[in-house]
Image (spheres, rainbow, N blue to C red):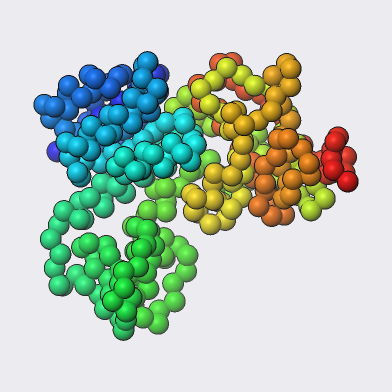
Length: 336
């Protein structure tokens, strides 16, 4: 029987887009536009996962209230916040209320599907009884495959799902050298599932010449504008555009994410709530390793390859932006 996912989201277009994506993955989907209808339905039967926005109709924090109510009904019901609110305070609040994950709406569909699939996999594993036959011991290292736990010298070690399977692959055959692809395969394709296709360096290079990529990529109401440059310590990427009516937009650096595959390296940037706009809504953002003294700045996290992306959510009309490389000394108002 397919897993049942409930989406509580007041924006019709977003609600339907995510519902379609979940159904394509084989999930059964229930839709609610406000907190109270969702609670009434959950009183009769809880779903397998609840995906919640924070702002629900006229309730600015309706999602938080719904999470609190659901957690009081079930201690193990999976709950994910999927919201445009990206402040650390909101994220910490949601997790403290009992949510299993806190995601912002600029996440890509492949990444979202992978996070949900990984959550279901972990819950399925934890629901199984542990058996001694699935324990692997190598000296002071002990791995429990059923529960996906690791202990070193009898002390617990916190690993992600992907890290667990990589350690398992290395511990299972001591002395065998494995390359990156073999470790990815051993991780049961978790890295492949979580990978955002539009960000892979090889695919970007196929779309563009080695100096620039500018391409709109598919998503649920999401527009992508991207550039890839090789810059030196005396150079910066200049991004020029104009603010547009939308739910959310951000300008982010992806270089460390592309190199490491770690999503924690992804969220380095500036969004529409932080950027300083001109009187006509125009903006200029500079991306370089150190802030040269400008208001709108994004850190490239080093020199060399710099992959930069603008995402917009439900923008009407679509945003237009230009990318170029400039000398830092030529930036107006740069500090001496």
